[in-house]
Amino acid sequence: MIFSRGGLNIKTVEIFSDGACSGNPGPGGYGVVLRFGNIEKELSGGESSTTNNRMELLGVITGLAALKEPCKVILTTDSKYVVDSVTKGWVYGWKKKGWIKSDKKPALNVDLWEKLLPLLDKHDVTFNWVKGHAGHPENERCDRLAVEQRDIYSAKQEV
Image 1: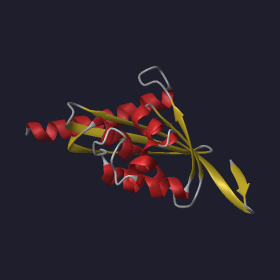
Image 2: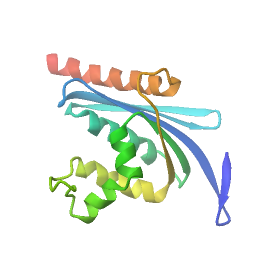
Image 3: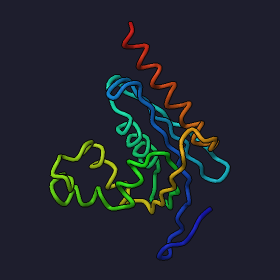
Image 4: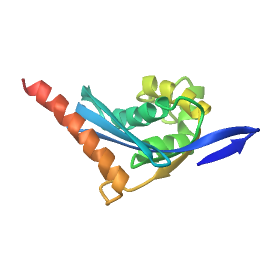
């Protein structure tokens, strides 16, 4: 689907994203599915020592960063942390206050938020939260990708 904005034709892309972590911190992974019409692409990755929220953020960042031009994006995730931080404006407040939250504690994952915010400026993103592990086909698919990566990093630690 393509829509027009200011005389420019902008593609509509769906991004589905999920993160997984064993322990917090521990080995983790993320999975992403990008869809433009009938074209789909899967992306995944992970880290040996991370948190679930970092993997949720990294999945969203990876999906948005894969887009080669500004797009209208419908981003579906089961991460309340990511969705609420952006849609309720928390992350913008943290940044404005020097990455300090309203409870005067430092915001977490600043390095990833600083990567995500320019991507949100580049793309027209609508966030769609879904309940995790509730049968949403693309969320389940992203979860499988994330868990595969988590397990790869878990196995590397056992060697």
